[in-house]
Every structure is written in structure tokens, then in C-alpha cells.
Length: 313
Image (cartoon, rainbow, N blue to C red; front, side):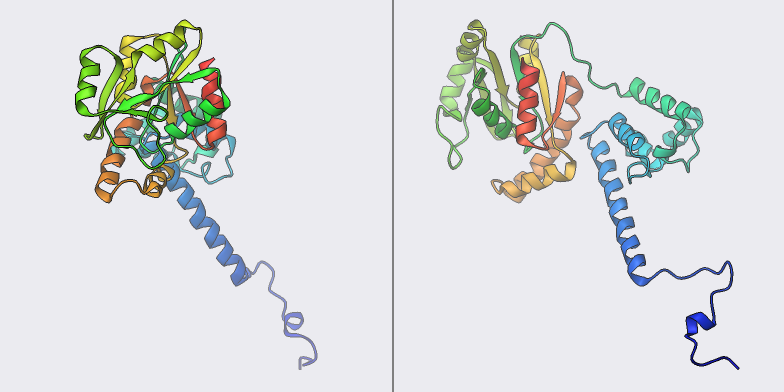
């Protein structure tokens, strides 16, 4: 008869090889980690789909941290996150590269890794800065990415760079000063400036207001040997490239698509319809980043501003 004084766990030890159930707190923590990892992978796939980051950049992150959530992403998931790749095309790519559908990005062999990167570079080449660039620098990017904030930081901390002041037909926002933030003009005056050839570029933004860059202050600053920074939209950037092919074009990116949405909603300066319209525009604008010489991520205003200033030298 068993001695009742012996504790139960000592009297009946687990049989060799028997599995023990983890404590409830451990299972709850593991579940939370799994959910967080899935969310991180989903956010990264969205960033690739919205062109906030390139497929090559996501692959580099996975290879650098194979044990992280990004490294645990399966290759089929990664491929279908890339615009224009559906399930049928994905399967053909996997077969062509000799990669198993269950393979994870962080577990790719050296040959598979090189073949996948070569495949991406052939179809979605990353930026290659041009030579012979001038001291005219254009900063553009999607709506709400923070172009104005970065440009203001450059103006304050890099006085050697001349920040161009645009003309616009929209009304001033609270705190904006005419001649400092923008030249606020009416439609008749804007038309006169276009007719007189006084604008380097001009465009209608968000189907609402017109913006343009006065030509004379830029020409004067360049003649003095200064670097000139234009903070303008995509349409204007294309016009500047056409007028001066040697201009340096810098595209400002958000840290993620979700962050861009939060910034736009958090501004509180547009109604729901205008926000939806601007988000649709942002998708198109993000797809144009391949036209630019450099990309800078605005994850920290001071750091992003310093990087743009360095590229402008």
C-alpha cells in the first residue's frame, strides 16, 4: 500500500518519454508571440504590395535575420505579395528556381538565395544613381509622408541649402505664413505666372489646388553656387526632370503603408472623402519611385533630413 505521506508527484513520476503539458502561462505567451509574428509578416507583405519596400529589401532582411518573423515567411507568401504575381505565376517561378513551396526565406540555400535575388533584379531593378547630376535637388513622395517637415528641418539645420518656396492657389492652413511657407495666390495670378514663364513647374494636386515653383529664385541661388531643394509633388518632379535632366530626384518613403495611413488620418486636416482620395493617389505615387535617383525612408525626421542633405552635396 502506497505511503500517503509521500507527495503525489514523487509517488507517481512521469513515465519515461511521456509528454508534459506546458503551463498555461507559457502557452498564452507563445500564442501572443505567434500572433505578433503573423502580424509582422502581414505588414511586411503589405509594404511590398504597396511598394513601400522593394522585394529585394524584404529578402535581405529575411536573410539577415532567419530566426525572426520575416525569416520565417514562406517563399510562396513572399512571391504573391509582389505586384503582378498571382498563384499561377508564383508556382511557375518556384519550379523555375527549384524552390520547394514549403521553403522559408530565412532557410534558403546559397544557390537558391542567389537565383531568387537575380530573378528579382532582372524584373524589378532597384535604383542606380546617375552621374553628372546638378545642384538642383527635388524631394517628392506620397501624400502625408512628411515632405514638408523634412524640408523644414533641412532649412533650419542646413542653411547652405536654399529651400524653394512654392506658389499655390489653396488657402493658408493655420500657422502658415505667406512668402515663408508658400506664396498664396489666386487663380488669375497663377495663370499670369504660367503665361509669363515664371514657373519652373506647376501642377494640379488631388484634383483641387494648383502648385508651382517660381523660376527666378532658383536660378539666382544656382548662379551663386548654392544647392537648391524643391519640395514638390510627383507631377512637378517629372516636369523638373524634363526641364533639367541633370536634377537629382529623391523619393521620400514612409516606414510602412500602415504608418502612412496613420499619418494621414492623424493630421485631421481632411475629411473622410479627401483622405480616401489621397490614399488612392498615394498608391499611384509609391509605384513611381523607380523614376527617382535615391530613396530615403522617413522613419525619423532628423535622420531623413540629414540623409537628403548629404545626397544634395
